[in-house]
Image (tube, rainbow, N blue to C red; front, top):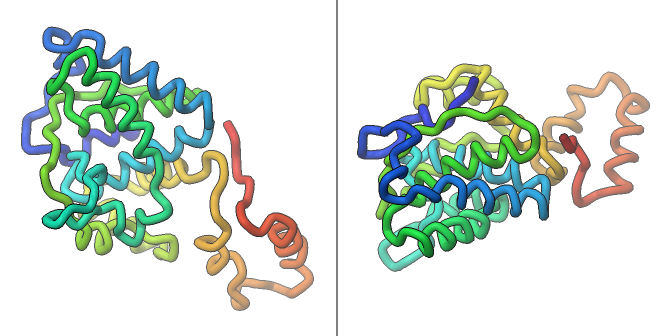
Length: 228
């Protein structure tokens, strides 16, 4: 089973899932309820939250640096090419954080909330569950340059994907497929996929490609992929 929190996660040694039992005993239930409500409003948000966590962990580890906004001293990862107008779900994490802060201010890190949200989102749509080790520390810096360099792009080759997951993050091709699968919940823009689908060298004949092109032409903005 793929456990995203096994990616190098923070400055601290991670602790068991009971980490907040004494300091914020209702934290995990509060986060779980908030995520379930968000996914019930929009089912594809489950995939978006898993992807948000994945894009966070690929840059500086699972430290919530992707949540930091642009400031005079921070070049936000939100505006990195693989994230801008693409990664979503920030407001869902903000909402969960607000609820947790009401019951135990300053105790639960955003990095832990984001990690738990990915697990709870998977469960909310009937996917797998896993134990989440806790105790991550939030980053006070972002790294847009690393996000642009290390996050896999929509035009990445298979070998580049395998290398970027394996060499840098010690993840297997199986892990890569599981993470990439989060992108198939709900709707996906056509543009990132069209270069691979419609290259002339991959077509056996013009006639073979017409049904797919016709279908995309009838729905040019988004393509339905899969709803669990």
